[in-house]
Length: 363
Ligand code: KG4
Ligand code: ZN
Image 1: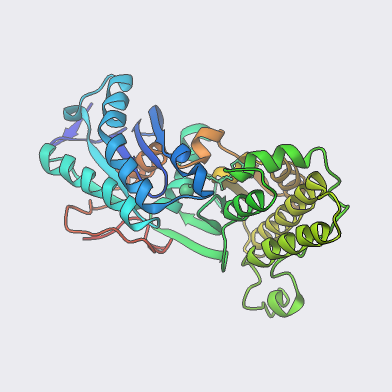
Image 2: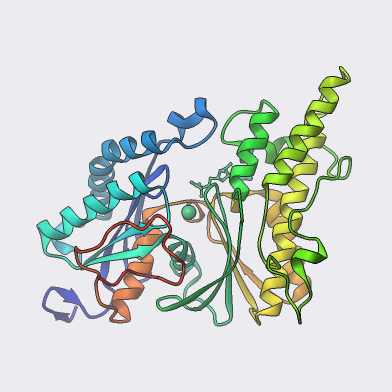
């Protein structure tokens, strides 16, 4: 392979490190080819709290990082010497959790002399699409739904022009699933169990509010309201709590399956209709879905149907690449290397609120 200094000219071998929430991810890609995606999750340690506890997540990253890195290198059959560049999530995410990945990445970069790229977690969720479906299409939108985020992005250029179209103004969609599951006594994480129980319920039995869908928030295409493309799930969570209370007050059995189905329908209805509207109004004929909630069966079903009716081509990476992982960080890092973007170097800090427009940090 032709080289400039220690950097390959084509198909760079990139190590990606992810620690923004409760997954310690180390991925290795060669250009657009996935070599390994090693992930250690601290989810089990958060179960009794019903949500991710940042301090516990940070400590778990410290414990998991070196074993996960060693396993990834061994599985890919490469050594740190072979790596052309290192990419790490610098934000957005939990501050302490991000620090563990960033400090580890800096240590590796310093020790090996490899260039280091500090990259955006949300854009990495989009970049991962390259590993399975090949080159990303033009006119691309992205819908990211997980425990930490709910965003609609416009991806003009993966490496240097990504814009935020809409985002949640309170809870993330996955967070709403987790909180509602707790209310219904279904445990953590809430998404998979609500998804399963909702299949036994009637999604039309109880109609829960659709956040930020009133005309005063959405306006019109010509005169958009402030929250036309934004989401809100905290009112929905409160509505579920009130509903459960009403049944309990009356001494009646709580219809858990119907509530789960009605709640899920409210979440999925809003997400899919807003995503399709955002794509249509921004001329985006392709949509990539990412985040842990992408596993949701009703979300997949309704999004596929609504995209098809609107003439939007939907792309959904495999589940293990939708949830937080290091391969997505490596994939975006490899694209940055391939386009000749300048490495960040060591002089940067984590940015828990890193805006989506900052694909990689410039030191
Ligand atoms: O991307 P992810 O693995 O990690 C973080 O956000 O940290 O997403 C986890 C979230 C959790 O809130 C979980 O309840 C939700 O994704 N989730 C689901 C499903 N599977 C996981 N939500 C709805 N339906 C599912 N099948
Ligand atoms: Zn994520």
